[in-house]
Length: 195
Length: 335
Image 1 (cartoon, rainbow over the protein chains, first blue to last red):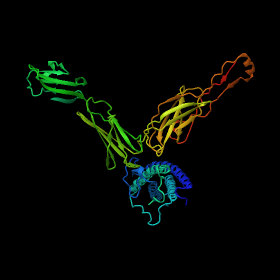
Image 2 (image 1 turned 180 degrees about the vertical axis):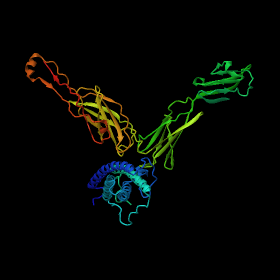
Image 3 (image 1 turned 135 degrees about the vertical axis):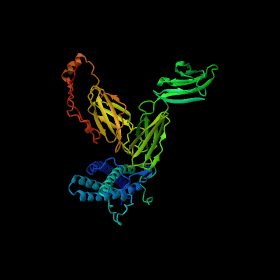
Image 4 (image 1 turned 45 degrees about the vertical axis):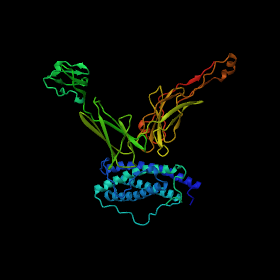
């Protein structure tokens, strides 16, 4: 593994960040389209307020500009791993509920799920470059989908997609921060600094 | 004591001369001018169906001594209509501002109170000294899905009114227009114009929050604009300008990911480079050069105009031309 501050590592990081930014942009665009379709197909009100949904990582953050590069990567990775599980659950519920009746919605969800997985992989690669390595996913299995009525499940799905759309914007910003040289130090902490 | 009272347009107003009895002999003045006795009922001053011209300083004097017994300022006006409120972030991600005004004047003093709620949290809106009808809020969180709720209440002596705006963090992001737009001809290139501009100075961090730009240009002789969307950089070379024609050019900006386009920048004018006209030659030179006469013809490209809807926000650079106009061939003639 290349040292975190070697030229090749820096190039690789820059390349991963650039591709990650483009992926986040595409992902956001697709999530916004999926949101429109989801709201329409599920008979929801697009302006409905959804309370914070348990288990859905909130993109909202205070003092965003003060975060370190490692914090950004770790928070992003935790979020997209959670979204991977949530979207898989949504897809499963959709198939159980509608079967092939709404294949287009199912395909759109599957496409977004794929992009979420790809983005999580990008983040894992960036963390590996920092010689930190991504946290392991082994251990406790993902929490099962809560037992909710049909309407509650639809609202939960709305909350998941809205939060994912926010994360896609935040992720692009986070990756741009990673490509910025911070004064006096690299934008991502070196091995000595990481926890 | 000097009093102040506010009354609605159209109201009937009765002014009592302080503690004077009804049958006391008094004189009323309005802005120093005596008021005719026909407006008096005893010592009371009666103003019927007041309008804005009735606003002013009213004074009551005891009949014989001319002692000032009572004074009041009368302000005739209206209760406030629903105010117009606007909120915008032109300095994302630092914060946003809200500004307001009344659709019609009340002609009497108004007081404005604004509250900003984000989820369970009430935020402080710091009022500007100038203009008075604006305040700023700093973002405490970014990337929140929780909406902001801004309520403006306007109150005056005759009533109150309010309005509420609810919006997402991203929806109100609208940069100021690009600054320092410059357009220059390109030497020896009769169809090019080089355009450059700067990020709006109010946008705090263009490196982390890059802007994309929309450029529009047209020759003054035509009404239809050409459009180019640019995802990075603060310059562009127009390569399809009509030779010799003066152009008007404007640029707008938008955050790469969120919000809406800015207003158009200040317009700049430029004309592509043109060749200097050749001087008249002597007969001897003409004999030598007659066979070298040339004409220069530059047919326009023949692509179609794009629909505006297809161009705006397309995310790709697109330049479209009309096929309707055909430039006349021009020749460089010399004797």
